[in-house]
Image (cartoon, rainbow, N blue to C red; front, top):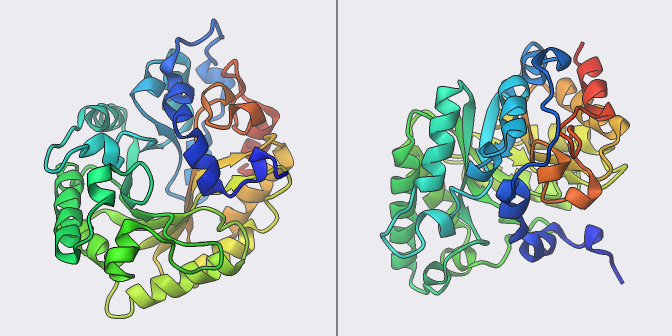
Length: 338
């Protein structure tokens, strides 16, 4: 039997997606000591000094309800990605009826705290309302995609650094995953989505994003080929994100993956959801050094602030421990950025 840790990540995510809100802070924080600002070293500032754009973290309202999270976000991270509040089920649960409460809260906090924002995510097969997944007509689905993106991306136009437009659209062999979008519209759904996103926000970096792009494997090569096809008549996809939900010891292919993704001709690549089972310092420095070695790698986003709030909390995968204190991996990253 395969353990949960080694399940394909889409299955793993589907099984544990209900935990996201819990681990992003649904419960009151324990009586942990908030790290002193002078005890931290400014991770984002040191990363930016290496000609990168930011080191960020996922966050949402529940994350921001924990004071220790807020202190670390303010000190150490330069960007936030909404973990759930911009997904389709949260923003348009019924057709034409939009709810921006959670997304507005995060965007307003980020703007007031001078943090960059990468939106997440416009078109994804998961956390999708049934009214979308049941559409079978190509004209209807095209209109629904365009309207959803026009409203969501348009609401935050000019405020976001970037937007993850299409997420997790590939199988492990690099072919397109089965979804309502692919099954009804074929590969054309990607161009439809990116054109709508560009029309809604002319300045945001538009990302395509997937998991298991952790080495120069078949899926990574499939992503490169897909981006080249979509961009063949003019650039629609600006950037590629690799999530990097890694197992312990699984960072060795990072530089090869980033190099391969950059070969698609995009303006940048980024590590968009980093966490590493065990949180070993050596694994984290391998990832950081890989990004430093690839000029097009412009950002790293940790998928959570502390182990206490991680969707993989049982694996202790982040830079801060369950008491919101910096771990050996944090110190190793700071040393690598010296």
